[in-house]
Image 1 (tube, rainbow, N blue to C red):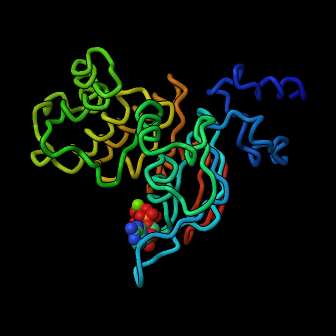
Image 2: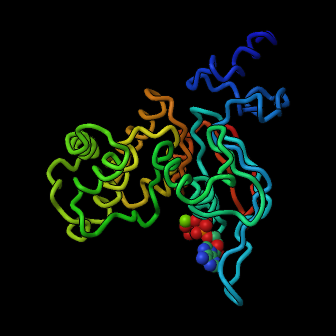
Length: 265
Ligand SMILES: Nc1ncnc2c1ncn2[C@@H]1O[C@H](COP(=O)(O)OP(=O)(O)OP(=O)(O)O)[C@@H](O)[C@H]1O
Ligand SMILES: [Mg+2]
């Protein structure tokens, strides 16, 4: 590739989110030619993140000097042993947990500069989140849970869109069930439909296939990757599933709160 062609790809306006030439230094075997974070259209840029949680004897230094860039339209699999800090890192990326030090820039916005209200608005507009524990609203039906972020974002036809998203995750027959009336895998699929429905630029998901049988898991993976392929969304997926990790453009391995290795898939 000529230098000019490469430069073209660095112009944020010309950047094709589906062209994944940025962010994969090891794929070409060469050093990453560009390290200037301002020149690259990163979806997420984390620098020197440190975070401790808990008090007294329960205090844990969870994230230790994490630096990580995720390109727009990239799918990153976040792997590592239980307790290594994956869920915490996801929360920090999504602006739900503030680090003790370090910076988080998401889609060009420095989250550290936003107050809580601005941060919540930013999240609502740009980021879809699938939590490990789903976090569905217990007093709302599946349909109402999925429609909620659409209503908050003033999207027209919130209920019709929510219904279509629930059908896409195979839950067209459970629209009016409350979370407590759904199985674990069904709740997980409601959480995924809710995260996907507003068409987020970035989707972070904590073990999105963790509670699903193989066929349903494949269906969910197809939906997540369709978001990436068709809408240029950036995916960060925590997973213990080697099959799902392989589908990602890159896996990042955490160990004891540090990035252990970043490997091209
Ligand atoms: N609020 C908290 N107070 C104290 N320690 C915490 C808190 N939250 C998380 N931790 C600790 O931080 C470490 C990382 O937790 P985290 O949930 O990020 O791990 P994980 O990699 O997602 O693990 P798993 O694969 O089991 O979900 C764990 O050892 C956990 O006990
Ligand atoms: Mg976790």
